[in-house]
Length: 595
Image (cartoon, helix red, strand yellow):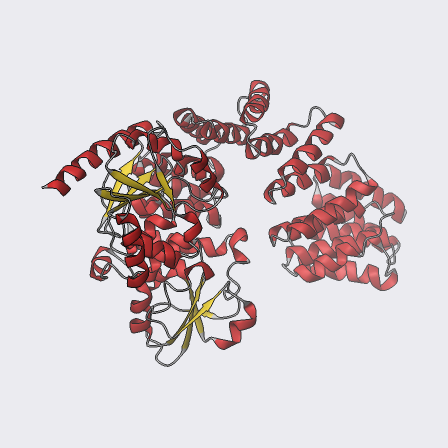
């Protein structure tokens, strides 16, 4: 038997899955011709299949010693490097594969996979575009590029890529899943639902599409139908973490915390390294008041791809674990939004006292003038900057303070409120202005949060909802609203005259001064509600269906802000019921004020 005959026999055996016969045939080829490059290359693939990476590497390097440009050997050696987690070497090997070789498309797909795993989405997309230049109809390149564009929030591009792909490969349902998700993300819920139903009609056991269908139903407000879809997906695919974590989220928002936590724990069991599943479970634990487990799970947010860029100190500066570090240099890094900063500001003194360190605080510029006297050694306004890393010995992200301190109900109760204070002169000026209106009471209102917030459709009630309170003619209404929705004041609810204060609120220090001069603040869940609570001002917070863990479930008060009262949507029933309760409470409040 010639070396060529033995190689052909080995290939036939390998195609049949008989690795032992394939190996024997390739070794016979090498007996006949010890320099046979094909035999060594193929023998290396058998070693790779058996996870004998050292032998695979030895064989491939012997090929490259004889033929440095051998594309199969370069590609297979890159695969060995990838399997051994030598990522830089793997990327270099794949990049060396020429466009004219059969290995080129697969080499770029593997580059894209490695870049995607590192959340280097632009680089991953560039590798896929290389494939599409050579093979415009390549199904996997188009599919993965559509998924990446969706991840980047470039949903219109994703839709175009995936629709073009389906025009060429109409039976490619793998592309319909991300297409349905992209349509959902752009608000085309009907299109997403139609596409999902089309696939599920052909394959009712498609658990991934069932989850996407459930998410579209959830976004349409059909929350119970979404819950049933997620539950059905878990039954079809009990090891599919995505089904369990979506069920975790929807049941948490329904207030069914026991089953939500069970679903979240099942998601983690299926995917122990899924940062998003851990974070969703953290929200459920914290909503249930289980701080010990909740804070620990909440730390997983730092491992998620989307958050890495926001936390440049993670890989550069040791993390503070809550132990004393007298004289060391500790930075509290930026994390989350303005409301979360105000929430956690109560703990800065505890960080200073517990650590004994020189504490630098990174703070949002919008809070300049309000937080200048916080108990830290230095305040830097702006984002975390890796260039500052060498100035610190240790760091703690803002949202990790509670975990480091071990915050529980006892520690929370020991922190005095108020812990922020308004400028008394500014407040006096606002008080004089409000008094000039001649109303018995003055109430500030906020009806919308940031339009970019993922839960804004549930958090923001709109100015029109406040029309339910128009009957209280003796109340002076003041708008504390800022941002795009400030323009809603052009059409106030009938019967309401609202003082538009927004132009005078140039900073949160101004807003704090105005709040201190008011009798009451009524706000949706925004930074203004947190600010009023931190100032110890009376504040009624309107909570939509998808409320934050902080507000827990089924209670009208919160240990975080003693002067705050909570008004909740019941299910996903809109704002009429909430405003009806506020109207009744306002009537009682006015009566109590008269007594």
